[in-house]
Image (tube, rainbow, N blue to C red; front, side, top):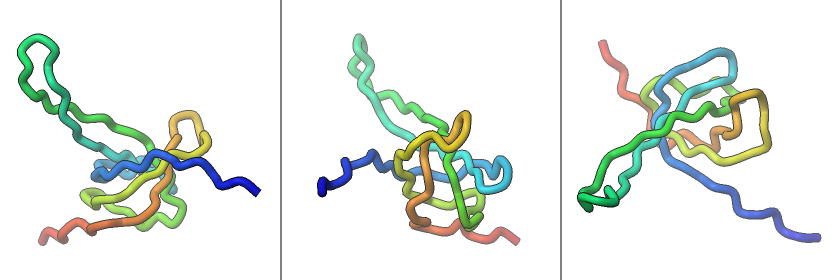
Length: 88
């Protein structure tokens, strides 16, 4: 029996609860500008599957690549690293 391939894992922040069992996760990264050689901040938003509906906006989560779950969802929530602070 063979081992499963390693899948890409990313740490990001939940920015939107976009329906039942779905969240949008934003992760930031830096790239070096090809001409000016300055580091430039970029961000990417991905849709992720949250099967237990445990994530809220502002939570820091770890997501993992998976098979296509729907038209846009290609990631799933592995764990909630840090819950967002309650305001109020």
